[in-house]
Length: 158
View 1 (cartoon, rainbow, N blue to C red):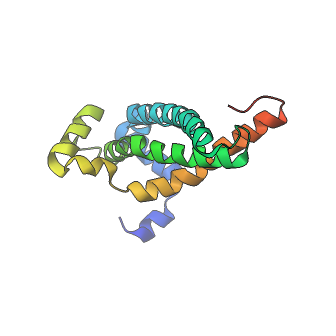
View 2 (cartoon, one colour):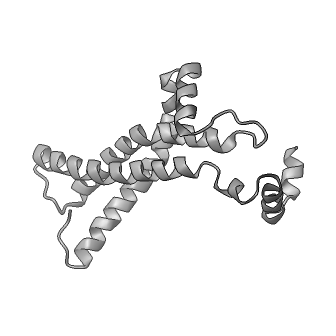
View 3 (cartoon, one colour):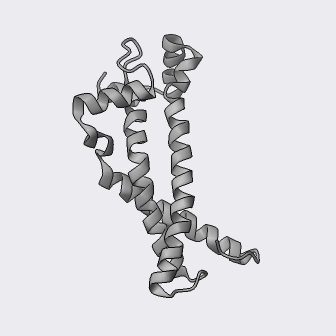
């Protein structure tokens, strides 16, 4: 299929084609790795944000409610998220992009094992910088806005 052909296809036609070829389960291919990724991402974000905030406060003597404290802590959390989520992104992408007629990977563990065996451990972190460049601003915005809303609602910062 060329790019020109792809431009003419609507989402409805692609969905029909997917349903015809793979059934309803085709829409959920790779969902297990997506769920695992989401759990790791959110767990890492909150744990690392809380921990890094304590460290920033100790090292800089900034207060818990200062924007600089929240900003610095959120950047650290974004870096930690990238470290823990990159392998899940790689596995998820490989699972979701494998051809429907040929099964290259049986599941998340099989995919991870084959990636490490065939391409090396560092493959799991391929694309680290672009992923971090995506996570750093979004994580910072999410956490800083979250903290500011807590203050607006009369709650203490985390």
